[in-house]
Every structure is written in C-alpha cells, then in structure tokens.
Length: 56
Image (cartoon, rainbow, N blue to C red; front, side, top):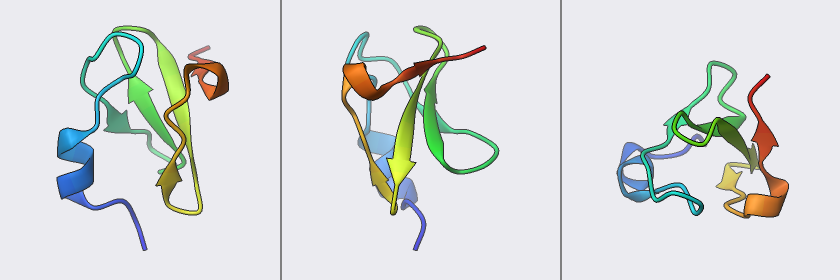
C-alpha cells in the first residue's frame, strides 16, 4: 500500500512548512526548499527533522 494522494496533499515540511513530493523511488518525501528528504518506512512518513537526510 502506497501513500495516498490525500495524505500527500496535506503533509508539509516540519522545518519550513513547504510542500513535499515523493522521490522517484517512493521511499522518501522531498522538500525542495530545505533540500531535505524525509524517509518513508513501511508506507509511514517519518516527519522528524532529525531523521531527514540532505539532498546530495
């Protein structure tokens, strides 16, 4: 089961409150403004700033 579009529409970056989108592998949510990727594990987005990885 993948993340629903309804959930993606309401999620925002916890750091800057900006929009998020799924990466190509569907294993992370990308904030283009902060240049961070929040992981998605077992179809659950991990929305903790400490867990986010910078975009290389």
